[in-house]
Image 1: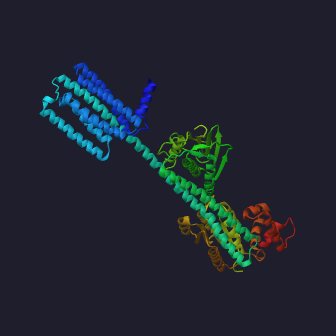
Image 2: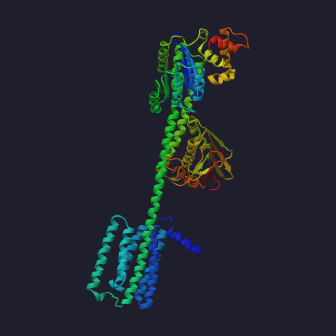
Image 3: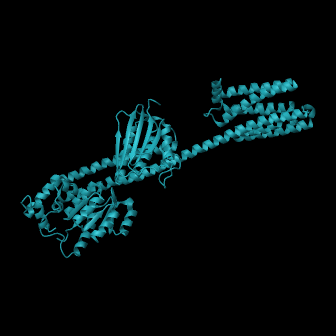
Length: 429
Length: 199
């Protein structure tokens, strides 16, 4: 029974559905329930057969439109059908038959106008709302000028009960719609903000990478231009000798090194810009070892220039990850950059297979993280360094969790920090 | 010879270091090489250079810091910064801190050489006494730089590590030194060397 309810809830109000659809489903359910309730209630207190039939029609209509919408997925058509049948036909009939403005029905008119605004878009919305306003105003005037054609409730207590019932139904429906809307709005805002922050981080990473690499590329260029100039000079003076030949091969070696660096940098720059633009989650087989290797090749000279030593160990037989190479690159880049910044002299990265999972550990020999910050280090805005935004590690954690893993960080006994990232291998995902 | 002198090269890229050394040795200058600030400190204990060429960003520190140390021990040694263009702000700071000139990488070797030789001429024009003793001037510049370490009693391997040359090259240079200076007795070599070179 509970399972059935859960399944129903998922079909009609599941998170994958658009807000309008969910709202529509809520309204249909309310229509179903209120029709059932007021039909039976009305029949019991007044034995009014018309009322019962009208409510039964509402119940049948609610159920069938819900069924049709869920199966056909043609929601815009269903909205229009609903508005015409319920707001333009049933509501006026109920108004005329069930006490006109002496009952609670006018509250339904407010409800109708709001729901129309909510469900329809553009011109269609204005046309329908206009028609409703004209129709409902005319109904009030009609009831006033032709009282013999409409039913008026004369019994005070019936008026009160009718008002209470309609008031409760309408407020429940409108509050549910508003609450759902605001909730969704907040959630989407949060998601947008997170996505914006993440693409900012991407841009920052790209900027850092670009700065580091353009600096690194200057070195082979300097070697090449100086060696070429010197070789030309030597050949002019004394012809080519062994030393000149060796100098010429140095030039070609440096050219190759430069091409490799450019290639590696471009790969990372291009791929991350594509990701930032589409922001799409593309699950592809990723070789974590290869990824770490590529990153190390780019970062080793950077670390060396800062007087630090970067080493990489990759275990044999690392399973592939089903995931996003760019995000994983960003994850590794962030933690490695952190380690390079904070290490005193050594940074060790290791990629190991742990059953079907993959563990990447990164150790540095820096001063560690203050114990009061450590438990909160993955929260947004928490950072060990004053000038940092404190968002890098929270993004790392998001990426790790997205890949079926997690990230943890602890101070090593003695000195430094050890970051471990676990990622699910392809077989498990 | 008006063009002799000692140049200190502080540069962490071995290829650039090697090229600049060869280029300046061809001009008859004696070259001391250092890949780190620590090594440069050791070199200036050995001999105060006539010109120093410094990179700024080095694995164990900054060329700017080394400049102030050099000023304390080496006085007004002309200092030329050879450094990546992106460090231009650092260079300006370096010139303010007492550097004399700078060239940005990638650099033109003719310009580089011309500036060094300009400094050497400037230094030598003010000198009353030649940089090298009479015996020392018999040696080639690479022989001289190896000999400078040999008088400290270092092994060939130790010398090779400091001048960034192969051990066999060091050995060849040293035997040239002993031959030119007429030193034959094995055990007395290093002592005699110091006497002959007057250092």
